[in-house]
Image (cartoon, rainbow, N blue to C red; front, side, top):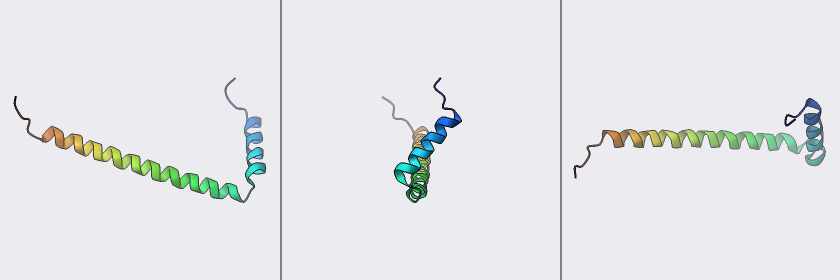
Amino acid sequence: MGAMSPWHWAIVIVVLVVVFGSKRLPGAARGLGQSLRIFTSEMKELQGEELQRDGSAEGAPRESD
């Protein structure tokens, strides 16, 4: 019941073309793709920094109480 049929997708696409126009849609899709690429690269960079920090913390000598 929650899944969209091909007819639903066709209606959504037609509405998007009518609302935004056929000239603006490729630019919007391009901008969305670039944003997604930037987001994923930043997430990978943050994960790499976190792994580096965790690795250096494990190798550091611990102070005794």
